[in-house]
Image (cartoon, rainbow, N blue to C red; front, side, top):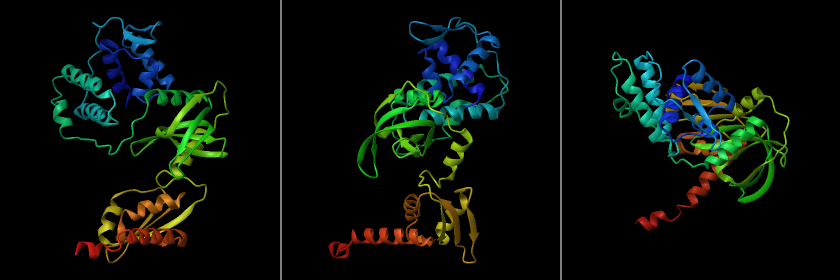
Amino acid sequence: MSKLERIVYMHDVLTHGPFPTREEICFKYSIAERTFFDDLQYMRDRLSLDIKLNPSTGRYYNANPKRRLPEFDLTEGEVFALTLGKEMLSQYVGTSFEPVLRAAIEKIMKRLPDRVRIDADDVTCMVKFDPGAVIPVERKMFLDLNKACEKSHPVEIRYFTASTGETKNRVIEPLKLLENRATWYVVAYCRLRKERRLFALHRIEHYDVLDVIFVRHDEDSIDEWIEKAFQLEHSGKEHRVKIHFQERAARYIRERHWHDSQVLTDLDDKSCTLEFVTQSLDETKRWVMTYGAEAVVMEPAELRTMVRDEHAKALNGYAGDETQVA
């Protein structure tokens, strides 16, 4: 969300309520605390808005609701971006953002210059975001972990590991929050495993933010670590993978950029091969199997064996079906 979008939305909620806290604004617009204060100063100094803090509740409000934002000379593209942002947020995780943002968008449309001839509902009826099987996240946990990342506070967690079915206590050093396929994770250094790992927020059964400071890791190395994954998972070891896709599957493979390391080669029979580096063979195995018989692992031999054995297990699950159907 751009600064313009944030200012418009913040002005609406600070004027009409429900009046938010600093933490709620940072969470709603996915911004750091310092960005919030920069926006607040801009609204006060540049836009002459009387934004105040209620010290007893910790909530901000517009003390002079009659003062409106200055008119913005927006293009149709900018209006579309505002509306698109509203629709995307309203669809995500079924949060309470939707009614506030819809009201804000409607007010934006009413105050736009006449030259802009585009209606919010006309745009949203053409654009639909479906995040799929989303996993709700407790807002307080999100806010607390976001602050722990920003302030470099370790967090003691009780965490359920889905792959093993085990629940363990551990202390993590949270570095960054990450959203991937409608699921929120915290990138953190795990003191138990002595390595950087991903922890799904919805699997954290209990947490305590510790009142101490850990030494912050380099931000660039964190982003590089995230980007090394083929999709999400890490194992510490890199594997060069080569997969052959038959003609039908190849049409879909060509449409996407799968990884920065990828090499896609078109073949004469309209099939293709895709090569890339992955840090998790297990994750890659699950992805390859979504293409069924139209994808064949060529390298490495370890992954080829994993996929073959998984297909054999699946086949055993259907043993005897011919007799039952008959």
